[in-house]
Amino acid sequence: MSEKTIKFEIVTPERVVLKEQVAQVTVPTKQGEITVLPNHIPLVAGLMPGVIEIVKENGNSEIMSVSGGFIEVSKNKVVILADTAEMAEEIDEKRVIEAREKAEATVKDLRHFDRERFANINAGIAKELARSRAVKRWKKIKKVD
Image 1 (cartoon, one colour):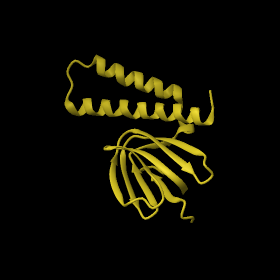
Image 2 (tube, rainbow, N blue to C red):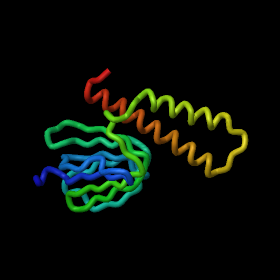
Image 3 (cartoon, rainbow, N blue to C red):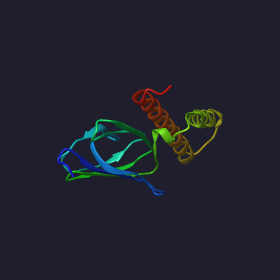
Image 4 (cartoon, helix red, strand yellow):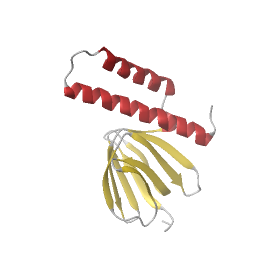
């Protein structure tokens, strides 16, 4: 393990999404986007739906979508416990657009709904928007059309 890297792990209830040494990690926290570099101060924070960008030792970037969760930073180690997380290249952009449109239509069609259902629908929309942003950023980095 190099002093120029961080041990990074992102885990969901279903699987370990990624586990490797990285140069830096940028995540969407509830207080704003942060970038964790080697020797970062210890930290625990809640995550917002959004895009995580990882810069590997070789300088290449990896993009993933996260729907929420927590990040823990300790001595040169970052662990993310995510509700859901996907590598951008795993995301089907067409299905993301369809899911977001369906969720938005559901909100428009509801005349009477409770707060819990409204919150769940909004969380679904936020998740799909995060997935969409992850795919777009990944395509831009990888120069994919």
